[in-house]
Image (cartoon, rainbow, N blue to C red; front, top):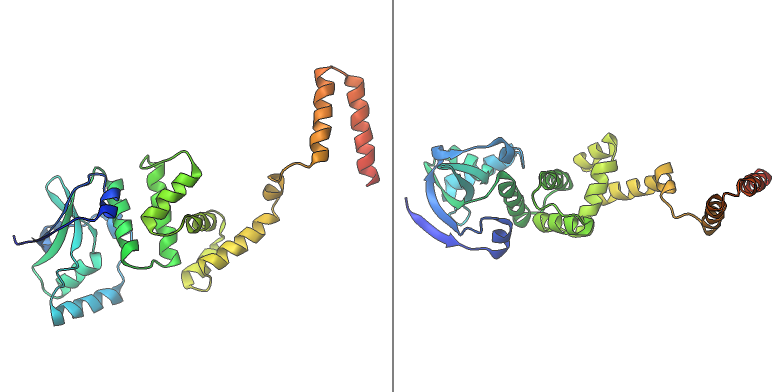
Length: 252
């Protein structure tokens, strides 16, 4: 097989736990295996497949745009470039340029596949929601999990190529958005930011949100007095104190 080039990208290699050099070479398409986890990551868009197929027929395959495969147990598993693979098949090609990778786990390969997509194009809000959900699922399975929320957001932001604040907005929308809001995001009626603002405003009025507010100085003072009476076993004084406070509450 013809060797095309050696590619080294420090940012990508940082996400690739193996730290392997990426080798681009021609591989027969029928030897490239598909795996459900990578197929479902960013589903095929039929219109894009048609465009790519037509472009390959007219101009040939652009060797500067290889697909990415995971070399695992002697198999070539496709992790990125499903549209290009389909286009090459539609154009009648026998082989296609591939960058070969070695990963320590499927989690590492999925993270890398997501990073490639986000570096190559701007993901839609719907795609970002799905990608973040996958990234967070990978963390829950032990990959790159950190105890601090800020570090977790920073790691996810690096993989997705977005800011940490955008990661937090995505998480808020994923956690609290109703089915109606999610449907409007998917249809393009709502942007992520609009959905986030609606959710944030609605949460301000929920009992959970109110319960989470810092106790007033008066309440803290009252609780300390209660604590003092309990420590000194002044039960009668304690009953009198509670009665007085309840009378004040009734007067209000």
